[in-house]
Image (cartoon, rainbow, N blue to C red; front, side, top):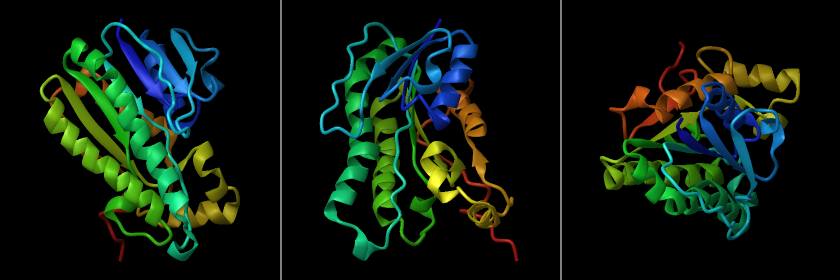
Length: 233
């Protein structure tokens, strides 16, 4: 039995990852504000952690950890003139510093497992400029830099990769998709004419967290329906 930690595993993409890992009989530790959808899953332990806090206290965990996914994120879309310094600080605290604190806490456990995996999340708005994304794109750009730096630093014991999705149907994106008109507009921005869903991203996450991807590290994998690289004319 392998052990995985999923930060933000009580809803959205994180919950779908937890479901897949639990169904395969793994030991899954979820760190999030509340247990959410994990309460009825087998082999899952929940610790209440708020990654938006200044200094969240993470639980001590003994033994090897085979993989970690850090899923907490923000969608803070405003024109630059409406963004305050606190907006940037909050986005960096949740997206970057939360991940850094977690990695520091459990790096020794990852090394103990050998050929373990660390998975982070970015956004399509880092590599493709989009209006009103200044704060979150800045924070997620730092996550992509962290991914490549740690992949070099942690090799060969720990693999480090990142997924960069476009808008996905999750509770975090609910306000952007809460009408038929908003949903249609989001779908039309993608060459594949639909948006992503959490279950699909979870399957890619499972691949990157397990030995199926044992020769992949330092990658930022785009999961964006072609938005960042394809233009239909």
